[in-house]
Every structure is written in C-alpha cells, then in structure tokens.
Image (cartoon, helix red, strand yellow):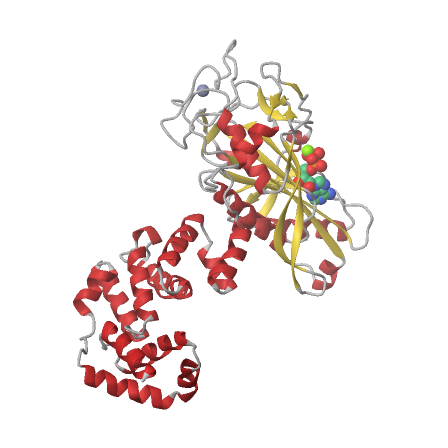
Length: 491
Ligand code: ADP
Ligand code: ZN
Ligand code: MG
C-alpha cells in the first residue's frame, strides 16, 4: 500500500476499448444464426469457418445497429468506410485474420457525458471523448480444461466466429477508476436503450479492455500504458484499474519503468498479471479486405436508420421531470431501463396524478418487488392496478396506511390490486347527513380555501373532497361526496 502523499503526486490516465456484440439474427458476414451458446461448432458454415473460396457478405442489420450506436454516442458517420484484414494467428480464429476496420472506421469523434468530480470535489458532468466506433467480427472461443500451468486440453468452439461487433474506443480522458465505472455504466445504458446489444457481460456481449498509465502531476506527456484485458464486470474493472494505478506508481517510485504490455486481472487474488510479452509485439499487417467493397452509408440510409433512434436516457429523464413534475431521483429510477420508463409513462397518462404513480412505483412497489425477489414483469400488481391504487390514493379514498395493507395482500396472495381492492375495500358511507357533517367540519377549519372558492377558484373543491375523504378514512361515497361538497360551497 502506497501512502496518500505518494499517490497524490501522480495523475492516472485511462482510455477504454469496449467490444459490444450486436443483436442481429444472423452473423456479420454469413447466414449462420447469431446466438450465444449452442452445441459447440454447430452455428457454423464455410464462411465463418474460413474455408477456402467462401466469401463474406455484409449483414445490413449490423451496419444499421453500428450507425444507431454511433449516433447515440454522438459520433459522426463516415459515408464511405473500409473493412480491413487484421492478421494474426490464433487457434480460435480459423481464417488467420479478423475482418475489422482500420484507418477508415464507420464512425468517429463522439462523446459520452458522465458524472464526475472536479479538483475541488464538486460534482460535475464530464464529457469523455469517443475516438472511434468501428465494425468487426468476433473470434471463436478456446475452452481450457484446467487453469494456467495445469491446462491439460484446450477445446475450440467456433460458434462465436463472425458474430458482429462494434468496438468503441475512448480518448484517454478518464482520470479515476470511478470515472471508468461511470463511463461504462452510461455507455451500457445508452446501448441498451438503442437495443443494439443485450450488453450481457457474463455471456461476453460487452467486454472491456482498460488502458492505464500514470504520470507526475503537471507532466506534459502521458506515461507508458499497460492494457488490462477482458475483465467481466464493471466493479472488477474498477478494482483492476485501481490496482493497476497503484502498481504503476509503485514501479516508478522504486526507480523502475512501466513497460507497455497486456495484463490479465485475477479476481481471486485482486491483482493483475503480465501476459507473456511475445503476445504484445503486434504487427497485424492491416490491409483492405479484398472480398468486401467499401461500405457506403449515404444520407438517405442514415436518415432511415435514425428513425429507429429512441429518446435516450438523459433526455428522457429531463423530459419526464418537466412533464410529470417528478423528482430527479424518481426519474432516474424510472428510466433505469427503457421498459420501465415505457411502463411508467403509459400508466402516468391514464392516472389522475403521474407524480403519485411515480411515487408508488419507485417506493411501495419497488420495495415489495425487491423483498419478494421479483422483476417488474413478475409483479402481482399490474400497471393498471398501480394506476387504480394511485387514483384511489389521490382522491383520498384510500389512506396511505390502507394502500400499503392492500398492496401487502396483493403480494401475499399473488392477486392483482383491483381484485384485492374489491374484496377488502373500506365500507362506504352513503348517508348524506353524515357526509354533510364532515363537510361542515372541514369548511369551518379552512376559511382561506373557502374564500378562494368563492372568489372563483372552483378547483379548490377537490381540496375539500380530499380532506373529507381523509376524515372519513376513505369511506365516504365519492360521487355523493363530490356532489355535496359543491352544493355546500355554492350555498
Ligand atoms: P495502441 O496504438 O497501443 O492501440 P491507441 O492510441 O490506439 O493505442 O489507444 C488505445 C487506447 O488506449 C485508447 O482507448 C486510448 O485512449 C488509450 N490510451 C492511449 N494512450 C494512453 C495512455 N498513455 N494512457 C492511458 N490510455 C491511453
Ligand atoms: Zn457462418
Ligand atoms: Mg490502436
């Protein structure tokens, strides 16, 4: 462990390379199904096996997803991009090269905004540059029997060969492990909204390499970077970057030099290891792929693709806060996924008070789902049930205590809210005399509102209805109550 004083002398610099598998039905350059898993070596054909004479044909949907993803992270689309061969030998890449893009990628010059802190510790929004987004294909998988020095057999599964990918390369703009975490979180959120990938890290749909270097604060030149490869969760990437920063500072403090290399994160030990240095002397001998023509994405096609662009999370949050007068925190919860936000907005449009629907969803419902270990899709309370509950609470027909009790019953008995409400709802008072007495009481206690009503602000009637409803513990017959309140106020 290095002292805070020593750590404070250095400025870490981090840039990320993120590989994202696209959710196309077929692979990038052949008609094979693009699907995770499957019996090994069954989702293959001469093209993705790299057999002599087989020719690639570019998947149109992969291009459309790449453009959508690129625009969502503010990139410019290059009208004519070029596919290149990246040559290297590896057992799970039977062609001996990967089709990728090199000097003319499909998109460049983007950015992603991430929450960060400035030097004084104030919360800021930081714009992290995206150097490029390019298209390429995935390799197959080597499955090892045993680990490290004790690998006894290695199996090759080529099902993944030719899966369409985009690689998103950031500028070296990140400065802390937390910023790395936030950048990845935002990127994933945006990609999920666009629907181009499921970003499932366990299945390798989203993979990240982190380039890390350190320099003395105020130095003019970045230090030598090391690349930490293929860590499979954002939390581990944060830990790996943190570790790597300290390791490099330690090396320099001891008078050594950081070497440019690839390193592997070992999660069990919480440290990175150098991969053999032979593997770093890369010379990929890129050259234009002779079997594919230049890719042209003209203005018309671009416009067509952009019709599929959804409202992105940040914009949606801002709009929802304004439109439904909900808090920033509720908006953040409700937009966690596009599906959740869609559900909320459909419900909000049907309900008397969107604000109340938001509150119900983000607190009472979310809490009960979490306790029951259920997803929103599995909720016993349907969205129509949520609307009904919110409306009853809004009109005062259900006290918050009663509402909670009914929701508890819904979850206990796995019954939708309307069913529970019909059975358990409070007895109704339909005696006009009793209701009038309560109205009188409320009118006497709220002279200011009475004054407002009599000056023409008729909407204040709802206030009295709500107050009486509360007083009656939700038992006053709502139709009768409405009628009597207006009659009393007008008299
Ligand atoms: P290479 O030529 O080694 O592939 P690139 O310049 O293409 O390196 O950058 C690859 C990634 O490394 C990018 O995400 C970039 O932001 C990042 N990067 C480049 N230089 C540094 C550095 N000195 N420290 C940290 N990250 C860096
Ligand atoms: Zn194939
Ligand atoms: Mg590079």
